[in-house]
Image (cartoon, rainbow, N blue to C red; front, side, top):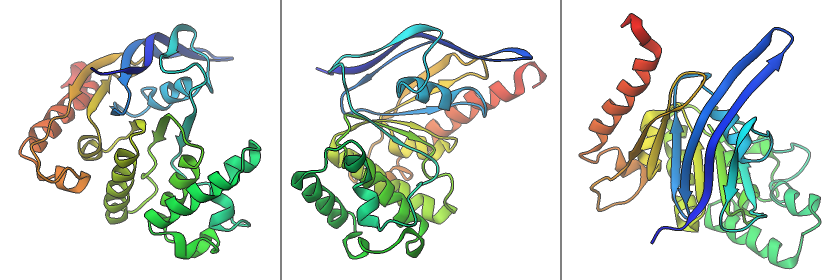
Length: 257
């Protein structure tokens, strides 16, 4: 039986300035199960990142509520488009930044950091500065920095968008495998439809602003190799891509198409 870890109920949000009000989200409702990898796609500017900020408790919804069913103080990890590694700190010191700030740095945290660096191919680079690493390696380091805090929910706001296409393919597959192996619940915001299909268990499609949920699409791929790169060769992949493309392109076209 699936265990619901997060529930968004009728979330509404607007931005306000001197020129008036801009509605961003309208009556957004969905659930996320423990261990699920959910992707959210939609037209540019529809409010995807705003929704992620509300889930992360960085913004308060105007109405509606966010319910965390597993525990009230669920740890949330947030991975952004840029790695935001600090150049004056080594990779090791960057990875341990969270525990230092929260005063939770223990031998157990250091052991976990060493294990993650070893598991994901960065142990030889732990004493290097960020500028000495490739873009893909820096993104892995940023993920390890997040996972050292042992989050129960991981939010990913287009974390691969700054990478070139080839590196993006490899790093997204790499990080997708890391997240699945850890069993962490994850929500990914992306404009890359192939990325959404290959990484997620389910895809929410948002309408143009003010966003509502247009479709909720489960991802079931027939694969013996359950990896993000292999997913792109699944027989169902093209049909899912076509469906997502139509859903989003219809939003751009509106009544003019």
